[in-house]
Amino acid sequence: MRPGTEDHDLARALSVLHRQVALRYGAGAREAGLTLQQAELLCQLEHSTPSFGELARLLGCDKTNVTGMVDRLERRGLVRRAPDPADRRVSRVTLTDEGREAGRRLRETFAGVVAEKCATLSASDRDTLARLGSAAARALEERR
Image 1 (cartoon, rainbow, N blue to C red):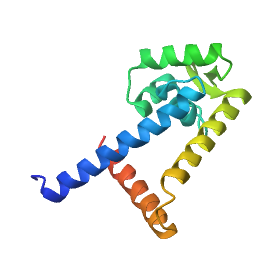
Image 2 (image 1 turned 180 degrees about the vertical axis):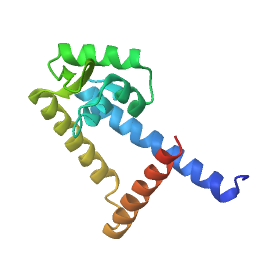
Image 3 (image 1 turned 135 degrees about the horizontal axis):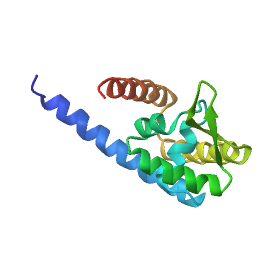
């Protein structure tokens, strides 16, 4: 199927949105002394304890990159490695209490930035944007 004009417009809009979100999120991460990738890793750990391979897939990078990020975050006391109870050869990554708090502060900072930058949107438009953003993320995830 050949993309039409609407597809190009959607791709452009998503690209601009992604860039703006990454810039804002990256700034919040830097304020916390983290890289954007480290902040994303902390957020991935909020509700799960993935293996290094699972983290690499979730973050869209190589396992060696994940190892380096985990090493640095572990030295800062934000994450720890734990053996998988089902397969002791596999290490899982979990948040420490300090890492959980750092993730909470990151989410709070980012929510504040979004609230400030989107203040001109009506509540209805913000709800629509959240719903469509979630739908777009699911659709793009299914295409992996």
